[in-house]
Image 1 (spheres, rainbow, N blue to C red):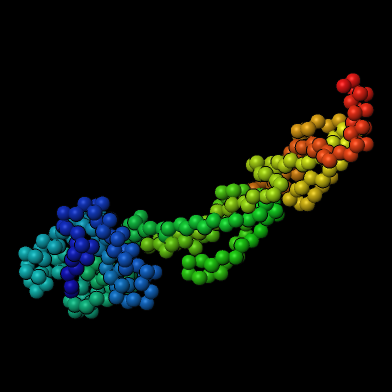
Image 2: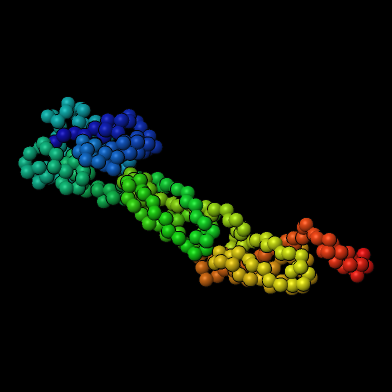
Amino acid sequence: MEYKDYYKILGVSKTATTDEIKKAYRKLARKYHPDMNPGDKAAEERFKEVNEAHEVLSDPKKRAKYDQIGSAYQRAGGAQGFNWNEWTQVDLNDLFGGATGGQRGGGSGFSDFFEAIFGNMGGMRGQAQQAYAQKGKDYTRDVEISLEEAYHGTTRILRTANNRRLEVKIPVGAKNGTKVRIKGEGGPGMGGANGDLYLRVNIAKHPSLEVDGEDLRTTVPVDLYTAILGGTVEVPTPKGKLKLKIPPETQNGKTFRLRNQGMPKLNNPKTHGNLYVTLSVRLPKNLSDEEVALFEELRALRGG
């Protein structure tokens, strides 16, 4: 049976610390990971070797036994003078069919050397691998939507890193900075799950509406006569225009609150903020002589 030098496989010294072993493992696992080397059988075998070496050297009990075997193996001058049966936990005849060579691996993904020496200590193997498994890197992409799309909800078509076409739903009430998660479409994991892809929402500037949380704000021009005598003005909303009644003698800068006419809440789209409408009174220009005379008469009536 072939003796495996796990220290050499990871490229660390026999006095390497746990952190040094972990660092070496992660570097090699990333280099030889099947996702990074599709179809490369040599890289796949190297990846298995790296995992096996880490499985032993990262476990204090396994490492202590392995170091004892290594010392005995060197003292015996190699495989010819080494008594394998003294150190194995399984019957070599059962494992190899009477032979002391070969690399069958027992169907576990680990070599015959590992199974013979550590077979009865493998109960924690899955936990150890899971503990050092690395989730892939998360990616973030920015996506711009209109205020109306944020109000009603929308979709975007995108291409993933592996050129898959995805239709992603952006929810009703999305705000600047809202992140939409697409699970598993980030970077490849190292023995763990793939990372995720996040779409980060940016709402394009609207020509007349300003977003303030769930509330909306706008300024609407109104002529002098409507401000004085009363009337109606049109107010923009994400659903279209609505009419706002202006009472007589409304002052410039007056703000009206339109309840439930703001943005829907992200996680409760049936609930809306408010729309605040500020009036900007516009004075008339290019007055005719008759209009000037009427204003003079009005000033006199007002005691001007």
